[in-house]
Image 1 (cartoon, rainbow, N blue to C red):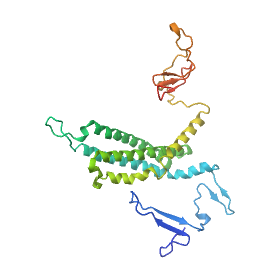
Image 2 (cartoon, helix red, strand yellow):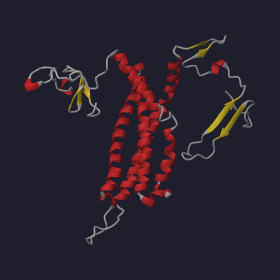
Image 3 (cartoon, rainbow, N blue to C red):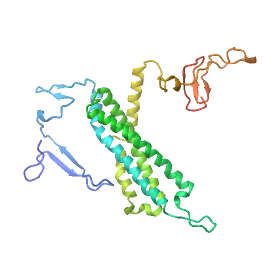
Image 4 (cartoon, one colour):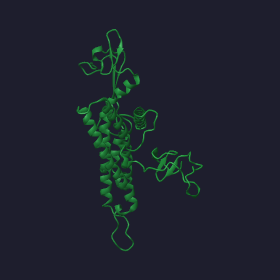
Length: 303
């Protein structure tokens, strides 16, 4: 589909425009392309999931319009996998800079005439950096699993509809977590380095500017988790219709211990308790009334 003539000018009906300087990520050139009453030959249509016949009839192998739409959006999964890895690496780089600085920069002595204390020896400084470092390690492990799933699907070893849906759901869940965490981590690392963290040569401000848009493109971070949750919810309902899925594995050792179905009454008798129709809470498990097996983890000790 030609958009320019031999002199480089846009053809009639075609408009192109550069987005100009952005808040960050200016190493990538973004622009806009618009068409006004421009005829596109039918054989040049992108018709992987739908096609238009010569008489104008539309057809698709995916009958549901909603499912067809989300299948087309599945092409974004490669970008989401890349963003998950880039955001995790960006967070790790910021932590490397901040922790190295905190292990060298000294501030205040102990009051006993000793050398000044390095920043990383202060508990407050440790609490603002080390938990984020641990979370970044966890994100690297999650990203490794995402890459294995991605390779299985696009490499052809596990290219099934179920695995593709699993990959799309996993990428949609991890991309918001990693990008949000990267922005939070980079900002905290910048502040942990004091004024030195605001200097461009230390890269923290530039990192934050470049990763800021990660929360938006390839799927807005506030939308993707909801979509992943809806897919997981639909999968749970289809696997066990009419029943709440149990949140523990099928291994007996992973289940809560069996409990008596009767409540202790006065003088140790086995008479039912006046509150036996209410869910019972013991430790971190909630059990249904008069049941020794229908238990689930308690999110809170108050129900």
